[in-house]
Every structure is written in structure tokens, then in C-alpha cells.
Length: 96
Image 1 (cartoon, rainbow, N blue to C red):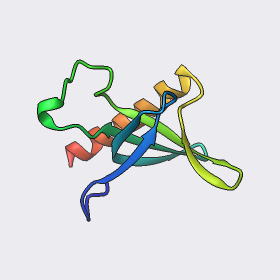
Image 2 (image 1 turned 45 degrees about the horizontal axis):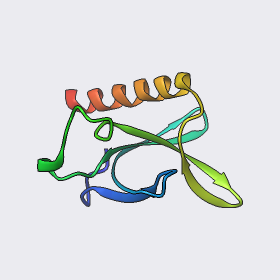
Image 3 (image 1 turned 90 degrees about the vertical axis):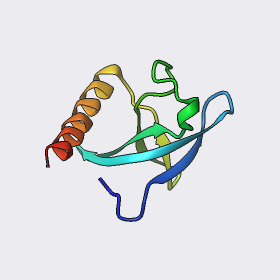
């Protein structure tokens, strides 16, 4: 993971127009595609670990009209595969 300069944050807008701030955890190149893992940036007192809004967010980088955009994954199978790849990386880092 990249921690040389502290965490990276981005703001994305969901389909309903809500802005969501995300903290970048790691980037994965897999089968020619770039995937990014994030956690929602929430204050600890606002964190509800049981909430759907708290968990790991995985997005992929796509090119559209020459512009890099973040997109949701195309299928549940793709999400499961990429989630498992990130978990391997995260647990590998813990073992070091």
C-alpha cells in the first residue's frame, strides 16, 4: 500500500447526485484493468460498521471519450474475483 505521503481522498458523485468522500486503500492491475479499493471517509463517531455505506468500495478505471472515469464493476462474478484479489494483498501486507 502507498503510505509515503499519507492517505489519498477522492470525492465521487452517486447516481442520485450525492457526493461521497472515499479514502484510497490500494490499486490493483488485473487482467489489463485497473481497480481501486476505497473506504468511505467517515468520522469515527459517525462510523456504523453494520451500515451498507461503511464497507469496502471497489471501482474500476475506464476510459470514456479520452477521459479517465471510475465505474462500478460489471458483474457479481467480477466483483467477487477482484474482492478476493484485494483481500490477498491486504492480508499479505499484514503478514509482513
